[in-house]
Length: 387
Image 1 (cartoon, rainbow, N blue to C red):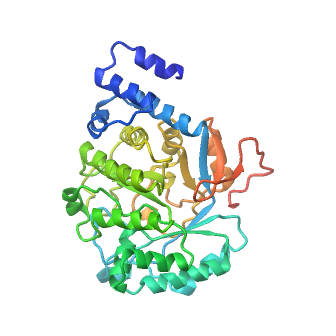
Image 2 (cartoon, rainbow, N blue to C red; image 1 turned 90 degrees about the vertical axis):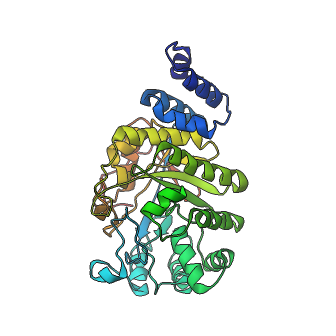
Image 3 (cartoon, rainbow, N blue to C red; image 1 turned 180 degrees about the horizontal axis):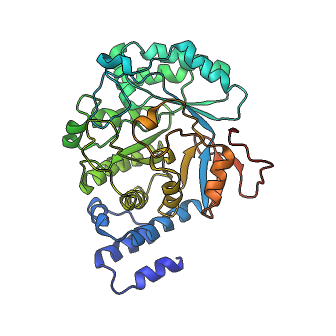
């Protein structure tokens, strides 16, 4: 046990509930949903110490990133999520974009000789872009870069694709896998509580469907990530319920790589009247996520949404991954009011960001194999355009 935790447990003023939780966590025992909810009343310093203990027990001082790019085929969407600043309904098509297959292939051609390891493909749910369209697109992407990992389509997109194509989730995912899709991102989870979901995203796939799609992907050998949207109308009990459903599925499949809490941003959407939560709340959510999600290997802070500074701080609150280079050329982040308006970092910038808070930078691939250890690497020159 490290000195910080010893000091906490020896603190006679520590609330008995929190001391019991700390003792369970340090002993490797799972905490209950009720204890998870209780943690939202704890001091940030206590949460940070406990989360950092878990983080370093699992990953030492390592902090992961990858060299990836994001491609959004369209922001035109049939759904009307209240928190979304990005997607545009078909009736607002003049405000949206719709890339052709050739547009997307041209984007990929630009990265043909770049050392990226992943392409992340998500977007709005467009009625003209169906299952077989995307299967063919993935096949063409793999023809350009056979080695690249294709992480594509949220459960929201997949539910619509399969429904329109009149195939089961297993059939639809099998088709995509056979054409080259390797894994699923974690988007579209939002909050699983049905009452909250009905208020903020009533027309998209249900919580049950989201979980079923990811369970099916895991069954087919396709790993995935999981997200949670926090900082809007939810309460701590809803966040813990969300995490508990994911924790239960992970017990069953062991198919999730990473848990990614996503901060609600109130720019230009139907929930703009709701104030954004503080950085203190951000760090609490990260820390509690690390404490509660004991069977998830990794916890990611998505640096474009919370900003580089908060991402750095989060590395002391349970986080061990800050995503990647991204090079997102669309407006998805600026439209949502994110901290980073043009989210793109070079490998050197990411390494320096991690080293500046005394962490050990490791470039990974999508499934967390080590690509390169940058702890003792010295860059010859500063090149912000290098992937």
